[in-house]
Image 1 (cartoon, rainbow, N blue to C red):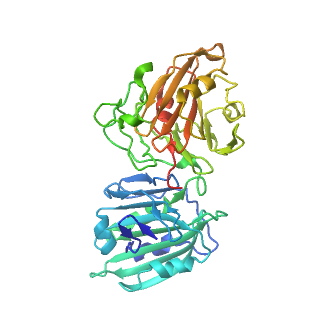
Image 2: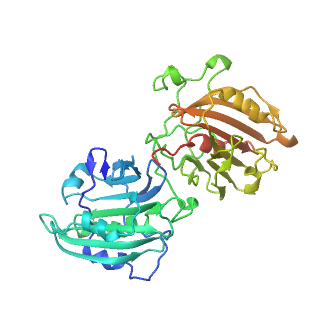
Image 3: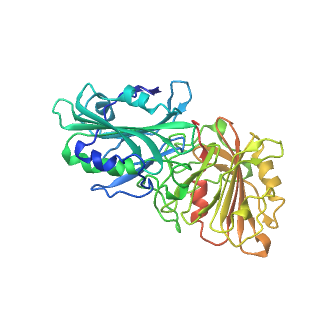
Length: 422
C-alpha cells in the first residue's frame, strides 16, 4: 500500500494520558460530528478524491491530499499533515497525522499488527473503538522514540454498513504538551456522505483570494485533482491553460469564474463519487443519486437548493419554480460540441436566451449561456457545458439565480469538478 514516494509505516502519536478519554468502551457511542475543543487553531482538509475530511492544527503546513495506491491497485484516498512529513515518517520527533481509506476488511486486527509500533515504543494497548460513526480498534503505543516522550495512536475502523473501504488513521504527538490536539483530530475524522452529512463539512481557507464585489471571502475548495483554486486566466495569458485546450474566442471574450466561494461553503459529492461541487451552506436540500440519460446509461448527478429539491431533480431539467436558487450538475458522456449542448439545453427554458460565450477555468473549457426573464420573472439561469483536459466526461450545469446576488453562482462555478482518483 503505497503513497507517491512514501510507504505507510510512519510512527504517529498522542499521549497515553489521553488514551482513556479517546477510546470508547465497547458498546458505547459518541457522535463523530460533535466537535471537540482544541487549544490551537485548526484547519479542515479534504482529500483530492472528495472522500475524507480531517481537521489538523494550522501549524501543520506540510500537507498531502493526493491519493495513493492500495495493495490491490485501487486508488487510496489520503490526507497527511505534519510540520515536516519527511521527518515524521522516520522519527517520533515531529507531530502529525494520516487518514486514509483502504480496501475493505473485517479483519481490523491485521492492520493493527501491520502498522503497529511495538518495537520503538515501550508499552501498548488495543481497545474497542466506537465514536458513533467509525467502529473498530484503537491501539495506543506509549513511551516511543529516543526520549520516550512520544505516543502513537493507530485507528483501524469501518463505517456502519459501508463495505467499500476500511479507514485507517494515525496521530502522533511528541510530548505531553501536544496531547490536547489528539482528541480534536480524531473527533474530526469523517467520510463524506457516510459518517456525516455533507452539510457538516468545512474546507481549508486559502488566503489572498481575488474577491468580486458582492462575494464573501471564506473557505475555498481545493480541486479534486490536487490544484488549489487560483484565478482563471484567459488563453494566452500567463498561467493560462494550453492553447490546445482553450475555447475558440471567435464568439466573444472568454468567461472565467471569480474563483471564490461563500464563507462556510459545503462540498457535495455524488453517490458514485464521480463529480463534486461546493454550494452555499443554506443549500441544505441535496440529491446525489445518478439519473438515466438519453443514452440509457446512468449519469452522476448533484442537485442542491435552499428550497424544494424536486425543482432541480426531475427528468425534465427545466425548473418549475423560479423563486429559489439552486444547481443541477450532471456528468454525461464526452461531447466536443459544448456550444451546441448549451443551446440545445437552453431551448427548453421559458426564458430569453443570450449568446453562448466561451468558458474557461483551471480545469474545464467549454461554453456558457445566460438566460434572462425566466418564467416572466427577474430570475436568470446559466447553462454550462464544459470538458476537462482528459475528455473523461462533459460537465453540464444548470444554475438558477433568482436575484442580483451572484455569490452562490460564483461558488458553484469556482468548485465544480470531477472527483478524480475514485
